[in-house]
Length: 109
Image 1 (cartoon, helix red, strand yellow):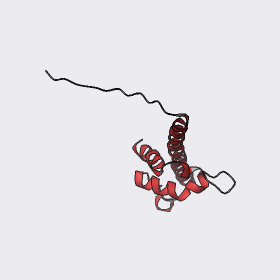
Image 2: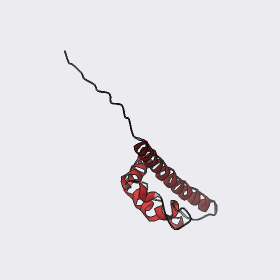
Image 3: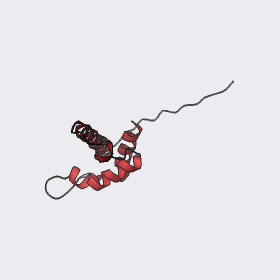
Image 4: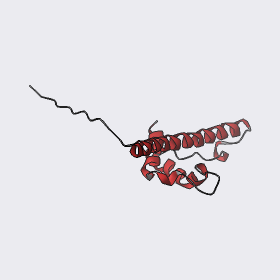
């Protein structure tokens, strides 16, 4: 007979920790949604160009949809995407891995 053990842990974060959890989760989702918009815009642009009669070779190049490609593109645009309008950005308030995970999730999707 095989015995399987399982453990359940409950988180009991402080208010500061709960705020950090929320910020990290929101940052991941923001990166996912932002880069999804970039990919969709690229596909829409290519489709529009086809209606103009452009040859496949002349279409806007595809966005690199790999996790690495999306992360590289995110890093190039994160300042503009997360700007507050006062010259500061909120992306640096979270771990860089938050945004990498959002890009990796999008690549998997």
